[in-house]
Length: 104
Image (cartoon, rainbow, N blue to C red):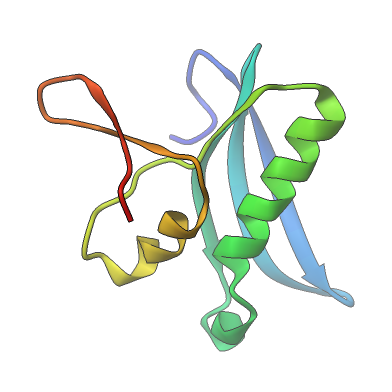
């Protein structure tokens, strides 16, 4: 499901020593990296691996000379997605299809 789409999708794996602790799927677009999905070992929750993944996306986009990084879905009030609010600037797609600068 994550790999069969019209874009080139990369699977990123994160290890602690030899132990796999997280996996992320990223679309590599012409002008951006787009986060599709990231999951991790619940025992490693304190490591903030979602935030680490976003920082990795930003570093990789910079290395590739890409101007944009899309963080993927954000649902206000969903605790597992709240870390995405910490990255600025960002925009939110409104229900009417327009983009609005995030306020907080």
